[in-house]
Each structure stands twice: as C-alpha cells, then as structure tokens.
Length: 311
Image 1 (cartoon, rainbow, N blue to C red):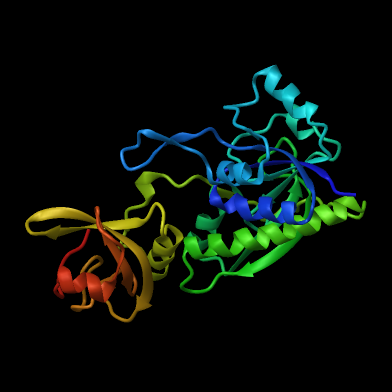
Image 2 (image 1 turned 180 degrees about the horizontal axis):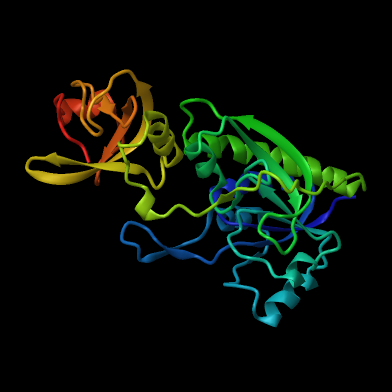
C-alpha cells in the first residue's frame, strides 16, 4: 500500500527525490520548503525554491514556515497524519516533535558516507579534502546533526577532475533512486537500521567567503582540490592586475601541471601557475560580470604572460 509522505526539501538537489516518490505512486500529502527569497536580476523579486515550483506543478500543498517554534506549525505537521517524512536538503533544524510527528519518523537523504562529512557542505568538503569516494545515505533522523542510524548506502567515486557541481548532479540522482528503494522497504516492513560507527567522524562546515581565495603557497594537489571543490559556486578566485586595475577572476576548473617556481607566478603563456609544491593550470575562468570561458578563450581576450604574479 502506498505511503503517505511529507516531503521536506528546498534546492534543485531535492527535486529528483520528490519526483521519484511521486513516480512510485506514494501519496505526497504535503511539501515543506524554505520561504521565497529575494532574487532576480535586481534581487527585488521573491523567488520560490526549486522544490516549491516542482510541488506546485504536481498540485501538492506547499508549506513554507520560517521555523517550527510556533505550536500551530507543529500541529499542522501532525495533522497530515503521514506515515513518514522524507527530508533532502531542507535547510531547517527539525525539533523532536517533528522528528516523531509521523508513524515512522523522518528519513534523510544525505550526500556523504556517514559519519564522514556530517553537516552543511558534504559535497564540497569531500572534494576539497581530496577524497576519492563519497556517496548517498538514507538515514533515520534523530536530534543530533546527521547522527541517526543508516538504512541504505550507495558509494560514488570522485574522479581526479570532478567538480562539486558535477558531483552534486551525480549524487542527486543516486539519492533519488536510493530513497525510492528505502521507501519500498519501509512500506514492506523490511527496512533495517544500522548505527553509525563512532570512528571516522568529520564535519562539513558551511563554506565561508573568507576561504574562497586561492592560496598558491599550498601544494598543487590542495590548490586543485580547493578549486574544483568550490566550482561552480561560490567559486575559488585569485586577483590579477588588468589594465592597471586589480580584478577578481574565478577559477571554475583546473588540472595538475608540471613545473615549479615562486608560488603564484605564471610559468608559461598558457597560465600554468606555480604552487608551494608543483603547479596547476586553470581550465575554466570567469571575470566579474562575464561568462565562464575555457582558458584558451579567456587568454585570447586577456593575455597573461609568463612571469606574471597572481595573488
């Protein structure tokens, strides 16, 4: 018998899971998502989240509470009389009354191999740390930060050049399939839960602006991981003097390169940049207000000679 599901999610990452649950003929009794935020070209228009837009197309009721402190919001949640809540990148901490507000509790789709990378930015942190594998997990939520017992796991390799954006797109589809499988097992009474190990805990703190600048004094491997872990958003960057004025250049892709020199110095006319150990070569760049360009196209419009200092 199909489950009565409350779905809770906000960004594009969550949408495939919502779609998969609908395709599996479960009854989505309500969708919870973050309230509309200012957006548009001037930041004046209120923009509905990707999950909000998807839910409206499906004809599912949408709720956008700022939090669950109001007893009325908690009661509304319980009144849906749902079997389970499915949570994927919702963006709000859930109080215990919500975690226990359905017959089977809340199940979260999390983008890491827990207990490694609990928290807000598991995709970016995995790449920035040089991890070679990550994955999706379905876990039953408890009051801790991503500490609940795990139901299903699917590993995904991280290739040498994979960016956070590419890994994001891979994981969101893997996660949708995995949650669909978990709900089938829950429906049949066959879903088993395994406590997370106590060893190997790591926290994926939210990415802050002050860590997006590239530090070329670090080893090339670290610089490369830093660049691809922040691509395409928020984007790692360096400053370059162009026409007598310093300009911020985002680096949206890179590769390891041969060479050595003073950190932050270009070693050739193709933008190979020396690091503390080794060198990197950006493969995709973006000037402020401009379009992302492959490095050869960027250099045709903005030549950068060997020996240029980049900070």
